[in-house]
Length: 208
Image (spheres, rainbow, N blue to C red):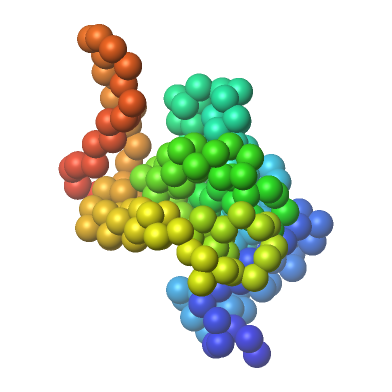
């Protein structure tokens, strides 16, 4: 009854439900709407859930790595290792992943790691392969984990940053889910590099 009313469904603790249930659910909703989205929140994610069950998966591995980088416990390049892990453990190239830095269970990223780290991590979710998620008030600098969104106290620069990220992602298909990620080596000849280069170019091949 609810399938015609929403675009998709987030399935929490998918590992605790028999696979046969998810397969039947998928068959039924896809009969109604082939574009209906089924997303599992399974920590850690399970490659087998992609075949015949879910379209998109919460990427808790990337989330944890972005937190570690923000805390200063891991180098920024370790984020790419989290992306590589998807294929290494068995996900197909066409699998979709939800990328996030905040949710209702955890302390806000900017509260734990600071504004600069939150800005960098938020941007990473928009330029890495996957689907970015903005959690309730993240786009206005909200500090409370489950508070009502304080629209009247929005931080303008934070909101403008997310608006620009959305515009850039929409303008450049290479940053979308069909883009390919390739590491580019570079050398800093002298001094410190405060800004890291990101290149978005080339064709995307959604049919691959």
